[in-house]
Image (cartoon, rainbow, N blue to C red; front, side):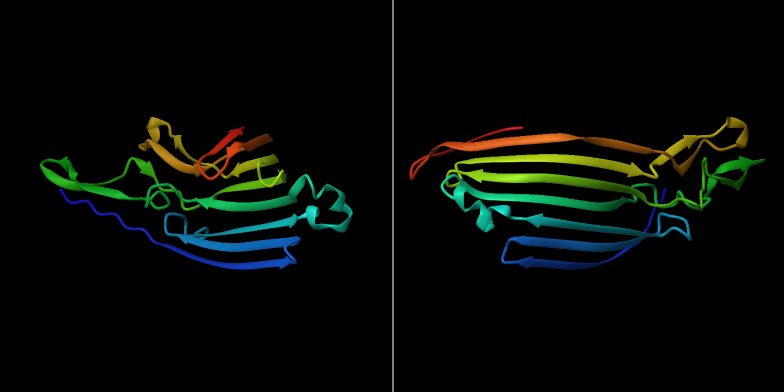
Length: 202
């Protein structure tokens, strides 16, 4: 028995970053991916992302906190990534031979998976907003985040009626959303030349 599969994936990306005095921060990335696993009209997926940050602890109006607050930053980001984790030939109709016989003669028959030429990238889009605080010469830190993550065009193996002659077909269907708040508190109860003990709670 001989079995071989092939697929290709091409990617390109561009990135732009800017920082003004380490106080105003901007990062952006644009990614384009092409996968042979999808239909001929949907091989390319485009996934942008961007983030902005403001280190407010460096502002002059925060000077009164210098004895306690080492670093404070607000940040907001939004980005998308793609998923092509499917079989290499789900977007085309495939056939099998050497295992189907009629009157002792081997024939060719369609595969049990129905090819779908409209298959496209599944994408994960996430918005995040948060604040990072560091106190007491780095001995105490606090992070708070709000996130909203949406997965779109989910790749799914849909069952087909047995009278079609096929078992399943890969499709893009539906979306899933996860969102919430996350908090992390950490610190160093002991930190000296001989021992560094870090504790964090999420």
